[in-house]
Length: 115
Length: 111
Image 1 (cartoon, chains in turn yellow, brown):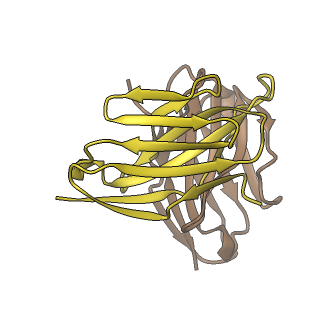
Image 2: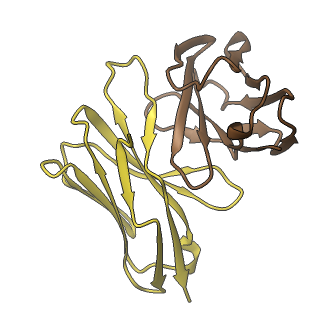
């Protein structure tokens, strides 16, 4: 049973276009939603994160949109560049009261930005 | 500041053999996590150390996996005996607060 569902599995976008990756979750106890970016041969690196008390967070060309009632969140990459080509993972963390901070990941989206 | 390092980067072993993976977290990070990604699937949590103590090992697949964290510094993950389904990329991450910093992973192939 997958707790965080991510789509699409792969995405091809033209340079300058908008890339959109979607995630959905079931557990309302999740309190922290990060997005990670992974380049080949490297580990995942935190890109941007949001908490459920805000509906949107923007950092440069990257924006997270969060819909608490629908239990969905998405990553938007504006003006996509070839250097953005990577695998993107959404994740969620349950509030265990500090006991543990394990992340629950989606299956990943392979993004290719064509020049 | 040095990031999270993992050794080896790749390991190819035969079914039934033993493999030990090592993770060196960022200096000063009390929290250390192990995750695994089997091809094409999600990155799955294995266990979490706080300093030298196992805080949560709910993700460990079975008793063929043994994790240790000596003196609250580096950690090892031993698989003994390895099975075909253990193949995948094993990631280590460390954190002091919210952000988990991942290492480059160890790609394990069991033949």
